[in-house]
Amino acid sequence: MRRRIKIDFCDIGCNQSKTDYFLYWVLGQRFDLQLCDQPDFLVHNLFGHEHRLHSGVRILFTGESDTPDYKVSDYSIGPRVLDNPRHLHLPAYVIRGPVEKIIKQQDDPEQILAQKSKFCCFVVSTYNPRKNQNRPDFFELLSRYKKVDSGGRLRNNIGRVIPFGAKAKADFLQPYKFNISFENASKPGYATEKIYDAMAARCLPIYWGDPLIATQFNSRSMLNRADFPSDEALVEKIIELDRDDAKYLEYMRQPYLPNDQPTPYFNWNRIHDFFEKIVTTSITPVAQRRRGKLQLGRWIMVKRNHWHPFPKPHPIVKFYDRTDGLWDTTAP
Image (cartoon, rainbow, N blue to C red; front, side, top):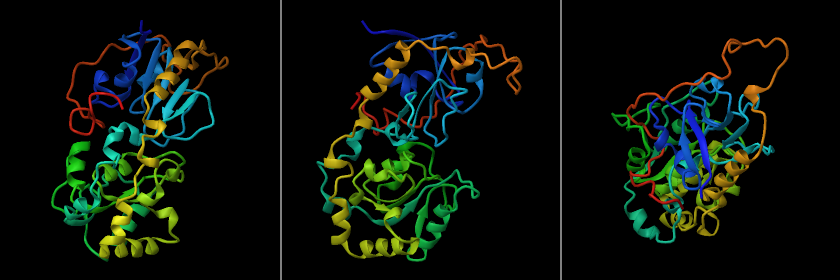
């Protein structure tokens, strides 16, 4: 008999359904999940503050690069690499789609190249110049050689912004030989959907970001900015591969994953086992711990056992989608 768990999800995005959420789907394969207003376990993201009103065990589930705050959350699942038993390292790209999409066993590299009618693309919409200027700078530098098509809001030059979502981006990337897959931050473990999307579309990823990316993917299947002394040297390599099909195909014949096999990150048992540890470990949740006689801050007046009812149904916007061709209906 499957273990029954009283659980809820909050602050996961204003248009995200709880029952079509990645972690709900994965946990539901092992546990009997009972959604309720007063859960024993609360999964939350950082798109709001409702989680601060809950007094059960809080589990942060995020794809962002933020360091978990264990004064707010009891456990965390996310892309950062942390030496903490309360944290499970789960790269953000794992949420994007099934591992089968980036396994090359059935690929015909020559045929794939024959279908690549365009040079390079770039998709960035959310951008903070105070945090990361290298993405637009590299885009401008490579554009001196050939036009780089930008389909996001940043430096858009194709006359339209591609719709949000995995399927629309996959369709856009398909005809391009290269994709600029720069992250918005460089932190150990922080590898997002950007590299997965490029690989799934069989673009050669031009990557910058996670300094540990070579421990997760075959470094010979991408152009990693960390392997070059300068942006100019990387651009020279891209030009060389663009002009020489044989050299380009050497990269495309390389598997993305070590030995062209799924890595442990795509095994949902890692998440199941981590959550099993959470539900079988007796702790005093952080929300119930006394912090002294005087507790200052904006949440001092919040009642600790205050619970919120389910929100009304609303339209769904999905980061991942098991029905659009990127996800299968069964776990890998």
